[in-house]
Length: 305
Image (cartoon, rainbow, N blue to C red; front, side):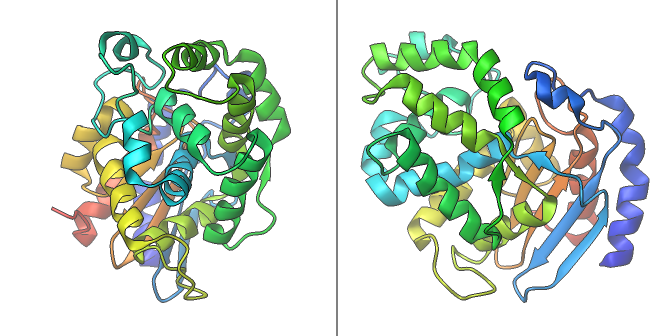
């Protein structure tokens, strides 16, 4: 496995030149576009890693996976999916178009920005701080890392420039999809997106999902089995924004990307995988990281299909 990872990173490093780092959040523009790393955690607790795996990044939309799991645990499937759909989107992750044209005015799925803002509002807690703490604690348990922290430079940058997300949230409030204070919910949302991690942290989170919601290192159930299935289903159909179908065809794993350059991938019953490559394509997904996963999926026959 280690030899395969080394070869795969070497084969695909050239693809870092094909993308660009995210600049709409100014702090993200400081990322190294040439970075490329991978970490795998199997269900026996073995770690395999290669490349720039010590690179720190903010998990951005990868956080939406954990937020969705917490919302489903706290509020139940019926309540969550009365407020947000489970359908793939052909529009960019920050689009508002479907909110206006759908009769229900609910977001299409929990992984576009509008949907994630709604699921953040549904997490247990009387205010944004309590909701953030709820998801943060789950992240720390799933990554087996109590030192997981917010990058406050990125958080401030997101909060300062997040006007599109603010517009989305106020629209949802006006449509009575969000019941809580908008700025309070947005504050929790921005902090969760600004959580700083390495590929090891994210691969561990993925390994919990791969193990039916049970921590492979402690054997503690963190996510109920039925919730775990729902989360992976949404990852499969909606996890790569408007490139989710193409990703399913070429790689075939429940996954979630973020504009910090990370992709979390789940190989059910086998392993959790995380890649990082901050150079993104025009849909917000890591170019080289996607290529790494494509080569691995092919060589190890990982696709669930």
